[in-house]
Image (cartoon, rainbow, N blue to C red; front, side, top):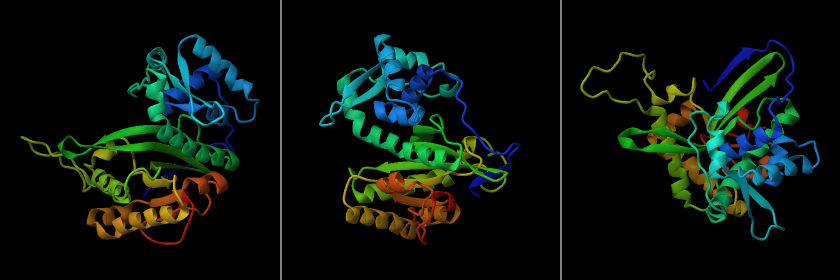
Length: 305
């Protein structure tokens, strides 16, 4: 089981932001670490003129809460991030409590993080735009990058993002969750496929209790992931950064890992696993039939994996 459905008390859902835009900008940058002016505009105020977001961003910069780095060869596109003071301020935002701050202390430090961070934001925006078209629930706080989970022996698996998404279908609201891995083709295909082993280990990991009797629980109910999720999230791999031919080979290697590794095979029987090309998500939407099921089958929507 990978989703939880409940009856909707009132049909239809209309986003009604009550927080002021500067507060939303700070929260979005605290979560995403960095975003361009256009990305923030698309994320928070897509139906307004550009200055709607640019004006408060510049005001926040004058207050010393945000700063930007100019992207190379981009017609002076600005990528915004929180300063140390901005990170300290957002630490007390209710939606961000418990999230460790990741302040970026200089434009140089920001430039080192830019390519991957902005690609993860691109991925989020594809889901946000699709949710708006469909009338689903998925907004700027429903995507948390760099989420860490413990494994045995002090190891950890870090998801590029954890996504929360609510499908609206008639009188039903179905809550979905996904671990999202964004691959820019900067690591070897073997290392990318090995990330599935980490998720399989998280899925199966039950902590041992040294020196005392282990608590008696139903089979599988001692899994560590149950601390955070009622069901184990889908695993979605989003690929970009090279030719279609190379991307297809990387997806094939992911499928081979599901076939060849016993623990990943078991994960694939219980948890939906899918891969798609980022440009396809942006052109057709994530709910189009653009996802390759890694355990086999025809392309389909991520919600149907």
